[in-house]
Each structure stands twice: as C-alpha cells, then as structure tokens.
Image: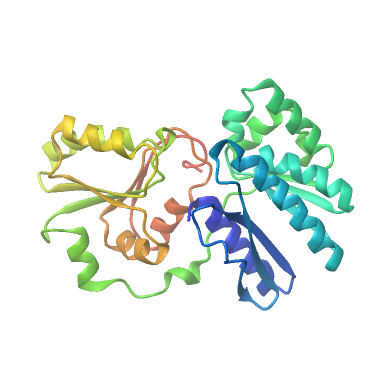
Length: 302
C-alpha cells in the first residue's frame, strides 16, 4: 500500500476503536479478485472495495460512478453523518455532489495532488466549487495549505494536520538474521533503503545518480529500492549506464509486513522526492530508529 492508503487505514481503524461506525471505500482494480467485496478488521469498521472498468481511460470515471452507486445504497440502509474524501480532485469534487444529495457533512483531506492540479484552470474551478460545500479541508503540510489557499480554497476552511502513524505497530521484534542477510551481502555493508513508488516526482533517479559519489566515500555502500511503478525500466537502464549494478538492488513491491524489517536493518532511509506531503514511510523509518535523509521539499522538513 502507498502512503495515502496506509493513512486511510490507520485513520479508519483508530476511529473505529474510539467507538465510531466507519465504512472505508477503496478501489478494486480489474486485475484483482472481483469476488473480494469486504474485509472486516473491527466490528464497527467495514472496508468496501469498488471495482473499475478494465480499460485504462475509463477506469477513473467508472470507479467514481460505482462509488456513487454504492454510497447511495449504503446510505439508505444506514445514513452517514460525514463523508471524508481524500484529495480535492477528483474524489473531493465527486464527494461534494454526493454530500449535497445525501445531506451529510463533508471533510476533504488533501495529500498532495493539488500541487499539479492547481496548474490547470478547469481543475481549479472544480475544486473551488467542491469546497463550497465542505465543512473542513485538511492538508498534510503547511506547503499544501498555502497551495490550497492559492487555488481558491477559503483560508478559514483549511486545517494543516501532518500525517501520523500508529506507534504500537512498530513494537514488533525485528526480522533477525534472515532480514540482515537479505539486505546486506556482507556484514560491513552500508545500506541505504528508499521505499518509493517509482514515479519521476519521487526522485529515485537522483538517488541513483548519487550512488557513484557515495561509493567513492563509502566503498561498501549499497542502495536498495523497495517499490514498483512505470519508471522502473528507465531506472534499471540508468543503473547500467552509471555502471553501479553491484551497488543497487531493486526489491520490487513488497507487503508492509516485509518492509518494516528492512527499515529496521537499514543504515539510513532515503527520500529524494521532488514533491511530498508528510511521508508516511519517512515517519515509519523514524519510528524504528533509522536515520532519514530527505529532500528539503514539501512536508519533509516539517
């Protein structure tokens, strides 16, 4: 799961433990098991998964249409008090229409997409229309609060609240020798780990370009890249171009249960982002006591 997904799950579980009835809606991609309709983690928490069209260009509109139908049906059975949408566009725009139709309050949390969305005039217009019906707009960093205000979100609606993690999730013992061997070929290796979806804005290309300089200073330096995405072929070509195959390993996408032991055993966590809100993964590295090196952008310095 990515940072937003982890945030939503943590928030939903915590609200349920506080006694609230929570329904968490998330996407069900065409390649996933369509029979998986719900997962129950707390008695008063339901996780509903909304399918989308298999064609890429229809995926977003079909998902929003299916979400609208599911929300309306669920609201008739058990009325909602609050709709909480994540990202001002497009989910927040759709949620504003639904909130008016259902007569519920609306809260929108902005995690970072507005950094790009505010550059497009028609997206700014839709965002301004959406927030007219919002009770509050939460931003994950001060930078996002300023950007939201510049895009037309009324300042009195904006509340800057950094992301958080659940500390108890990091009390489990480490992975022991097997994790160390997986991460470090030799005990003296110095290993930097970056946990990123492989998109240009996450900056893994800059971490790779820094590897030769790191090796000059620390001959036993290794960079482990955890995550996957459309940029991976380009990054693998860059590794060959820089002739750093011996110093870089791609682990691909891993379940969170396997990532946490790697975070514990790493010598440093690396976040070379071009844009970032409050990185959940950076907080997780800090929670297990591993130092973090990060770009001075967005919510990372916060």
